[in-house]
Length: 429
Image (cartoon, one colour):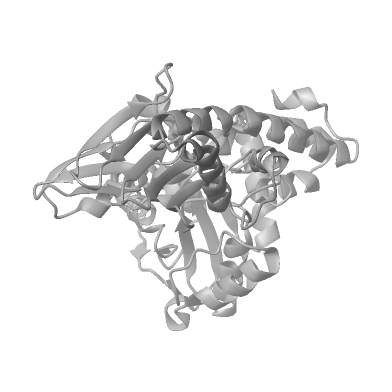
């Protein structure tokens, strides 16, 4: 996002964008602030003008970003380039979005969201710490780190980075996303094996991943079935026509893109049972569309194996999930009688029978034979030695920032109040 003075590249989102915009409007008219990147750019420009430029002083980026870090709530990693060619790399104190840097052997200083971008290069990479900036001088190429927050924030990387957004080739503190996802597939396979063995099939099922993200999960699940003596075939029968993600955007736009994006191999699936492995089931739109395609192509039955627990939380930090109502979990909850809702409102603490109730309700809604979620306890076990560094709010509704917690509480209260004969709000605790 360019301006007369700066260009900015942003990963993440602001939760309190409305408050920041209101503060800027109080100082004067605003133009081009439709996105969070534009909003941050205008705030930095005005701060520079008010405190430095009008007095003939160079901008003090450490002071500017310290004030910004105290002001904003959300998940932000950004690169700011000024008109002199100086660069400021910034990661806000929540640490939800990653930012990696590498000093290559040829002296170049590189920045990227993930360290897989540095593959094949010689040099040492490291994460930019939460609540800090790294300023790079255009003339000398030298860089200086500045800690913005005296409390010393520890990274709490969003779970979506590990499970979905991050490249499989990315590693965080020595753990590659590919290895983590394969381990999840192994754990998921042990649950699926019990269900397959309880209903033996004459023809081995096909284990297929959802393209681009589900591969390591499906490989792990297939390996797990083999270890337990369950015959299956590993073959990807779902393909994509383009790489663009279909999670963001308005409902009609998403539905249209989903219909255009996915194709199934009709000869391969005819009269076969298909186990589709995916990293998450969020709204259920993609799962439903792919299930319909597979059944229309002649599949005998479609089972879904999901490499995460149920997604119960909106995501205000860059995933475009703004309400509870759009999530498959909450749509399933609406369909349950009041006496069963309280069991499921325990979220990550719900007992296995309650999880099966949710699985069955969502499976019926998308015309799948079954849905198998990874239990929260299994995810915690796999991530046990690094839980402090991962934000699990998608599965717990325990938001990682103050504004996020307030917004989620309002969202939950409004949703439950709209339910007929709804359980008490305290049943979610």
